[in-house]
Image 1 (cartoon, rainbow, N blue to C red):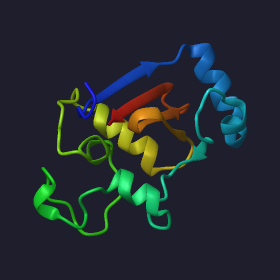
Image 2: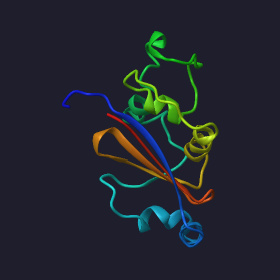
Image 3: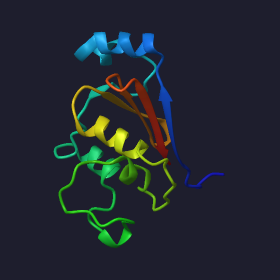
Image 4: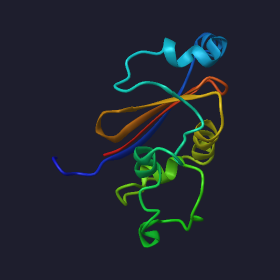
Length: 135
C-alpha cells in the first residue's frame, strides 16, 4: 500500500563461472555491470563525504534514541543500519549481515542504488550478490 514501509534482504550465490568472471574484471567490474538505475560504485561505501550516503547508511546518527543498537558516533556503514532506516527491523540469518558488512566496508565489491530505497551489492570475492531494500 502507498506509504507502507517495506524492508527486505536477499543473498544470491553466483555460479562458479559467474564469480570467476566477476573476479577477473577487477576494478572494471562496475563498467561491465548493467541494469542499474544509478552508476556502480566501488566499495568501501564512502559515507563520510557524501550527504546522500550518510542519510542512507546512517539515518539515525543525529537521533540515537531511534537506533535499535547503540553505535559510536563515527562508525562504518552496516547492512542492518541501512535496513533500519525507517525504524523497522527484520531478522537476518546469522552471519549474512557480517558478510554483507565486509563487502560494503572493504574494497573489491561494487554497489548501486535502485528504486524504492534498494541497494545491490556485488561481492565477487565471496561470489555473492546482496540485495537490500528499505522503502
